[in-house]
Structures are given as C-alpha cells and as structure tokens.
Length: 448
Image (cartoon, rainbow, N blue to C red):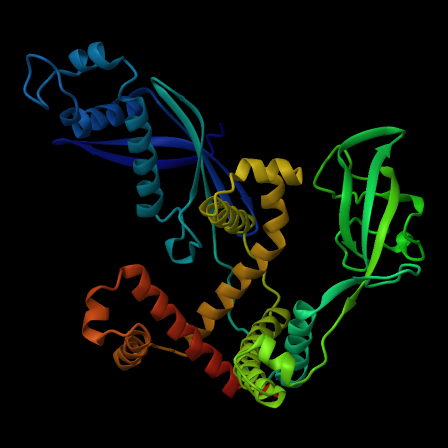
C-alpha cells in the first residue's frame, strides 16, 4: 500500500467524533480512478462500534430488553463475527463520504456511483477498492447543420411481403417426381458422425427440410439440391466455429442422408377466393386495400423511428468521445442482467441457456461491450444537448400524454394518474424528453 496518498476520515459514533488519516493507493487511467484502501486497527474498531450501535436492536437475547444486551453477550449468542459485515458497510460508507467531503472525487463529473470491490473481509480488517468513472470533459459538440439521409417508408414492399407471406401460409406441399431444387421440401433420414463416431443430436428419421431455408448448418442444404427420392448421399459439412455445442464447434462432420420424398409448394392464385380464405374480405382488392392501410401506418412509424436512430448514429459518428472503461463494464453488466431477467421470465434458466450456447457470463459481458460503449456515448451526447439547449418537459406536455394514455386504456385521466406508478411516470417523462430532443435535432439538421 502506497503512503503517498492520505485521506482524512471523520467518523461520528454516538456522541463521539474521531478523525483518522487513512493511506490509500490510487491508480489512474483515462476517465477512471481506482482507490484502494485497507481499514484496520483503530478505524476498524470505531466503525465496528458504530455497526454495533446501529444494529444491536435487531437481536433478541434472553434476559435483556431488545437493544440493551451488551455486545459481548450478543457475540456469545450469535458469533464473534456477527457485526463484521455491518462494520464493512460502515467503513466503506465513511471512506466514500470522506472522498466526497474532501473533494478528492470530483462529484460533478461522476458518471455513476463508484463500484465497490471487497478483496479481504475478516474480523478486524477489510480491504476494498472503489472504482470511480468520470464523464468525459467536452466543451463543444457538433449536433446541428449535419446532413442526414431520411429513411423513407417502403409501403409497396411491405404490402408485397405481407401478401406473399399470407399466400405462403395458405399454400400446401405436393409430392413430385423430379430432382430436388431450391425451395423444395425434402423428407429425409440422416445420421451424422465425426471421425466415424456418431454424436448426440445428429440422427433423425422422416425429418422435413425446406431447401434454402437455412434451417441446418451452412452447406448442408445446398448439397441436397439435385437429389432424387430414394437416393442416398453423404453430406460433408463443417460446424461453425461459434456453434453452440462446444464439442461440435469447428469440426467436420459427415451426414449419411436418405431422401424419402420431394415436395414442392403449391401457392393459391391471388384472387377473391384467396382473400376470403385469409381475411374477412370478399374481394382481393378490398383485402389488399386493408393490407396497404395497415402497412402504411406501420411503415411510416417505422421510418420515423429509423430516421431518429440515424440522427443519433450521425451524432455519435461526428462526435468521437471516449468513455470510462468502468462505465462500459457497468452498462454491459446491466445489459446482461436485463437479458437474464427476460429469459427467466419466460421460464428459461439462464444457466441452461449459457450451457446451450457454450458461453459464460463473462463472455456475454465482453460481447456486449461494443454496444454498451455506443449506448453510453449516446446517453452523454443526448444529456449534453438537453442541458445546452435547455430542453424541458412542461406540465402541459405531461398532462397531454396522460390524457392520451388514459383514453387508450379506456380510463379517465384522473383515475389513470392516481394509479400510475413512479416508474410509469418516469417512463412518460423520458419518452417526452426524447421526443423533444429528436424534434430539436430534426429541425436543426439537414434531413432529406
């Protein structure tokens, strides 16, 4: 531990106030500072006494009123280490408060609450570090007068895709006697092996496979084009290096395949009968007009969102900013937790998912870092513009949003407001602020 740095820590415990000079080690990198401390001796003892005073009322000890049992009696009943964790919490908080009060940490530039890492915790000693992430120091950003290409809605394409999808769903498979071609459905038996040894999950019978669907690993389907019903063929493929099953990733396999039958997709004519089958309309023109109306609403909205995203992407590209590695790590970790919550809410154990894809949580965090960095840069730029341009959400804006949401939910605005949670209110405010920001950027850049 370096003695070059010293922090004055003032601890008030009961009626007593004591001061300590605490040595610490400091490591600096761009936008990140790591403070390492060891709390022991007299400072530990004072923090331990504070922990005892704050927590003694939690213990029930026979023969004593709650909160009045001596410390030695509590420790005899609950163990001598009963206050160690609480002492650690007191010590960390006191050190953090001292860093803030002495302005050792630049509070105005903090990007997040310092991250705590406890390396040693025992009765009489705690060693820990606080990683401080700072916001970048930027005096000016370029966010007006930029040339940005507007995303246009592709209504015609959307109509064609939706009708084609409905037509495909309404079609049926018809057996044919010819060689297989792209788009055909094959019914086949196959058995896969690596170096002559079969592997789990590599064998199936009477499996349907549409050639060109990409359902199997790359190269598998292409090799079946030109086969006939009743024909056997060995398909040689290499599993992708990032294949979810580690025992197969990057390895060459041979699949002994037998084609049982070949079918082609028969599609219905785009006429009134088709419209009646797939919709509530009696004519194809009425059906198509309905598809177009819904597609236009959807595509216009999607184009607006895509243009907004393009505006943000342009700002990020034109304003190269470095952000703290600790901030990126924190964001990537939160992205992992969000994914874990979503999967487990669907009944999928996250540990099982990781095992299936052959990755660890650390691998996932590392994979999120590029996106995490872009999100943090975006957040910084947006916050900068909002403050610089003094963009604000007014009470009228908020009330109007409540009216819209209430009407959508079939409720009165007053009832909706009374039942609204703080999270909902924050979401509405954030959405309104984002809308104001995007409008400002749209009005002050060359979007065409």
